[in-house]
Image (tube, rainbow, N blue to C red; front, top):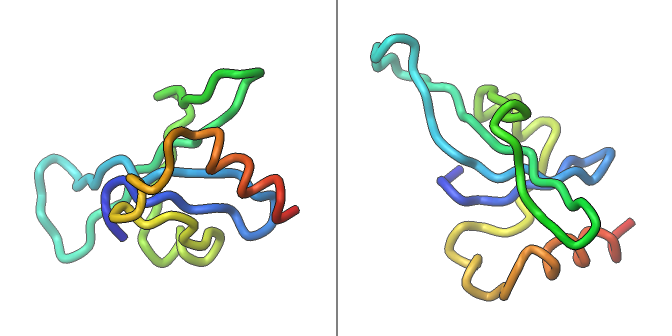
Amino acid sequence: MKLGDIYVNKKDKSIIQIDSYATHMGNFPEKSIVVFRQMEKHNELFGSLPSFNGYGSREEIEEEYELLVPQEKLQNYSDWDEIFDMIEKSR
């Protein structure tokens, strides 16, 4: 799980992107939490709102989501339209 990876929810096909990792008050325990942003399409605009960011452990996220586009392959897509279209075609 890397920054920038895009995941799709296994049930409702919503999209998240790994945004950052966090620890409590700068404590660096073995496990940190993963912070993601919920990507949405509104008419012709794509984006996320910080108030809808989420977090969880790697295991929690991978239980509900599957990797759609690894960070290394993001350059193969010209914009979010292509990613959302890929999801629509799989429904």
